Amino acid sequence: MLAMLLLVVCSFTASAQKKVAILGDSYSTFAGYLSPATNFTWYSADLNSDIAKNNDVHSVEQTWWHLFITKMGYELALNNSFSGSTICHTGYNKEDYTDRSFVTRLHHLGNPDMIIIFGGTNDSWANAPIGEFQYEGWTNADLYNFRPAFAYMLHQLKQLYPNAEIYNITNSELSEAVTTSAEEICRHYSVPNLLLKDVEKQWNHPSAKGMEAICNQLIDLVK
Figure 1 (tube, rainbow, N blue to C red):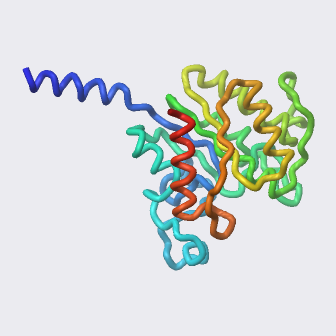
Figure 2: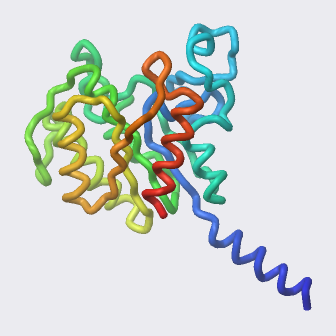
Figure 3: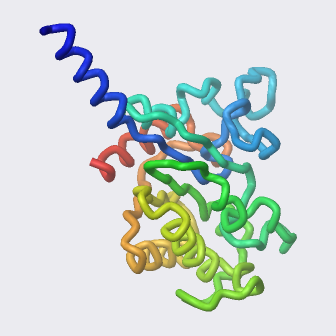
């Protein structure tokens, strides 16, 4: 009887385990854990790198997303994060980032139960064109601007993954235009948006303490 009860409990736990997909930039990378593996990474276990000497996140277990799925009892479906990537197609120095933009990569997230978006940082830092609020009729030219690209991204994610829970994380200390635009567009699509605060950073990237803060704030939002 006890054995049967344990089997039922274990079966329920396994079936309830959510698969989480990450769509992010450098804040969500870690070498060896990206899909596709050719995506540029920022964090790694290489203790001899300049990054490791200036940031104390040295293991994947310290990343916000690994902490999150571990504490919540979830499973990582895949992590499609790309260091330096923008949500829109416009990158640094106005270069064309179509090959790495969130808009392009959103099609490659597998079959997740939950999608966590963590971007906009590079759009802000690169001073990408902000554009106008637009919720339909996007052209490719529109997607070189932040607001249309962000709206298109959320629209497409809802179309492609209709059964997935979607959450957005907005970094602290971004431009007012990027921060307020993300908040308004998330509200339009009824996507919960986490406005981060008090995240410790080293070399402009979350430290180990900062990663824990992101994880804990996300757990509060999801719960």
